Length: 116
Image (cartoon, rainbow, N blue to C red; front, top):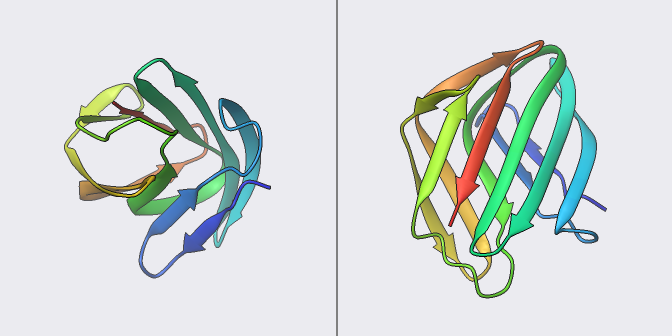
């Protein structure tokens, strides 16, 4: 349902939801922790967040599914509300967000992404 993809050694996670993509939320399990993913599609932007509820999860890349007609011209990333450098590469409706430095989310940490 959520199209979850995860590769621990590559520090990659991805979510291309297959239903209710405009307002979506789901739980996920990583190698050393678990959490929730949510996304909302607004006019001309996609907002997503990953929150670790227990354990830890390091991330370097995050893949998202863009809605029809949305281009990944700009990406903003924040870790616990602190901006972090990131860039996006899009192909078709998939956008791969690469964080300039990997982040290790621990219980209670949130990474927020805005693509538009």
